[in-house]
Picture (cartoon, rainbow, N blue to C red):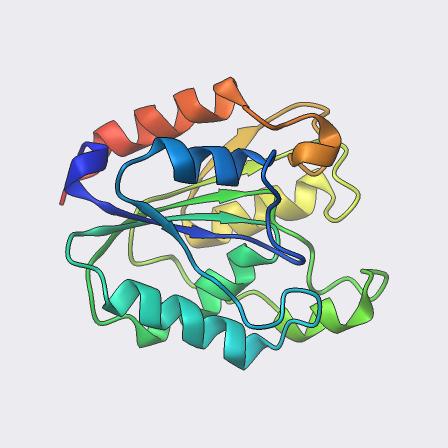
Length: 184
């Protein structure tokens, strides 16, 4: 699959992805990409956030490829039951451990726990060995439950602009390879 063959739906996490974040850069670069806009980025409500993802997927004109970061991942995963359009794949970066009672802000736990059923589409989970929001073994366990390819990004923090991942060329390469293996 090529970019032109898919609707690439960017699903940011808590407080959105700023202009220097890799998701924002990909949105500008990828011709068929569009961002799910939430009404309240700093006070996420699971039902509201998942409804926005469901609406974006169901409005798609081509097969969908989800590109979710952080809290965007449980949002997308919880939205799956409402999808009426074909999702060709999911690219999930830096999943937060939404079952960890130490997560802050505390209301992020309302997005947990993650469903543990295999996903109905191919997926990749990219995680960092020093992500402050999720231990590597937890991310790897989530990926295994979903049947996702697991990619360890090394010591990459939360794989966001604050961790130095604005352009993130390695991520672009992994995404391009993943996309090339998907079927519409």
